[in-house]
Image (cartoon, rainbow, N blue to C red; front, side):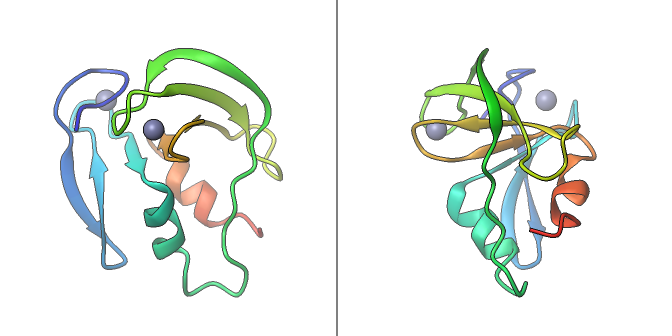
Amino acid sequence: MKCPKDKVDMSPMTMLSTVIDICPLCNGCWLDKNELQRITRSRKNALEVQLQKKRKTENRCPRCRGVLHEGAHQSIEDLMLDECEKCGGIWLDRGELPRLLSSPQ
Ligand SMILES: [Zn+2]
Ligand SMILES: [Zn+2]
């Protein structure tokens, strides 16, 4: 699977016993919909991402080639994430995963 921004092969990394894909160049990571659920399964409230004010980007989903849409996280306004409309996967730039995981909902 290739980074949607740099188009280089991403490397697998294990996080909370789930294998996710990290780009060696930009340190962004790709989470499939089920991977996000697995990473957050121990939380009291399952983590749901509902992006606000979505807009189309030039980037394509590394999983299904669907168009990625960028939007703001529903409770952290300055956290901008890219989501595939087709498969529900999410692209996180470097440093965005810890912020997402620390969100209350
Ligand atoms: Zn990259
Ligand atoms: Zn997709």
